[in-house]
Image (tube, rainbow, N blue to C red; front, side, top):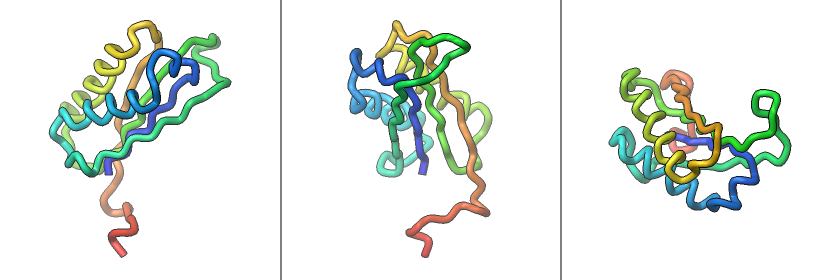
Length: 114
């Protein structure tokens, strides 16, 4: 935990690789000092077919899944840092966004908790 799921148009890899995107999102998350670096997980899902507002324009959206307990200001700052980093990497991509989804501790479980 946390998990950062990057959805994007496949064609952006002409500009930068998946590894560079993963590195940028990881770096942005780490810069907030909200997470232990070794706990940050980033995955990329690229799409060949998609629609962005009834158009076909490149996009990147990061869904940040984090454990509950952070303030709205901290969550907003996390999204802002992710978007700023991706805009710096992809200034020509018109649709770049991020949001935070909180996971409830009461119903979260993983293998290490067995």
